[in-house]
Image 1 (tube, rainbow, N blue to C red):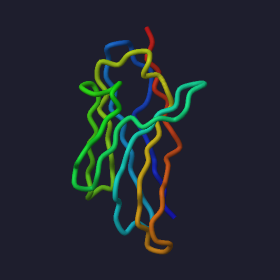
Image 2: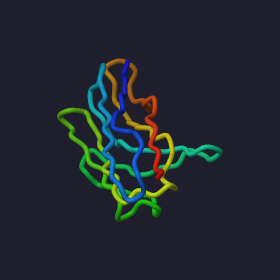
Image 3: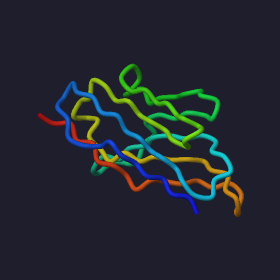
Image 4: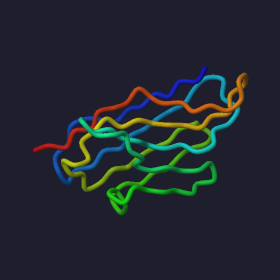
Length: 120
């Protein structure tokens, strides 16, 4: 079994910054792509940013230039640096990982979510 644990969410004023972290643990052989998704009230979950094992990144248009995704393969961790936050960034943020596990092959895992609220 694999667990993804997120941290770093909270309340921030418009224009502020937050850094999210997600650490994977368990019966991990290796992790392929990792990513951050978000879901605002009444909206569908959407991809915010993704990163391959080799470090290639992609971003939603709405966060390009403001958010930066990175990862530490040795720690099985992924991070999301969020700058110039706006109220439209308010959502629950979820970590996702494409994991090759010791028993069971390849599987997609999700974290429990961390709330990000941007408000004055």
